[in-house]
Image (cartoon, rainbow, N blue to C red):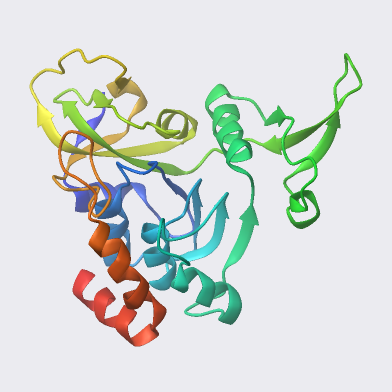
Length: 265
């Protein structure tokens, strides 16, 4: 059964320097509060994994938490570039950042392979792109039945996966709905997992199309209202579009980012 703890306790116990850490959530339910706690606790040398790095990884990279990023797209949705990400790649500030780039399909299949206990995934992606020339973890493989040349990518098994969800019960069973992305697969693929939730309830009510993660596949649960802000949590609060716009100015300059970082810490 998953253990219920405070956010600070959970991050302190589950996230270690040098870990491979996945913070997943697509469009909404992005675990911003957990990312900020990682910054506050001063974690370093992390390999960050995420299908769509946006503001939360820009913040972690700018805070010096990351040494490597495994991803499939990076940007400030609807606004522009991630300036702390760009600064780390181009100028090694605050520390050098290694990158490993994949497609969305490649990343999703890597999580599925990890969750399935398989060493790699096979797909028809990457054909006609330059990614195989740039990324060592993309390899051609021939089908033993048809001879067709496909693409193999290694499984992802993060040391810890962190996701945000709407609610959990007191046994640690988690329920999330709306756009669900790869949260389930990322949790199942991980060695350890933390789910932050908007609320903990006595009993989960049945809900159409909701994804339920049973408490026995989750390591820890933390109640963190507004834990996805400035992204949104379906049925709880809306996306803070103004903050996404403001982040472009905050992150563009090292000094203004430093001021924001001091407030977070």
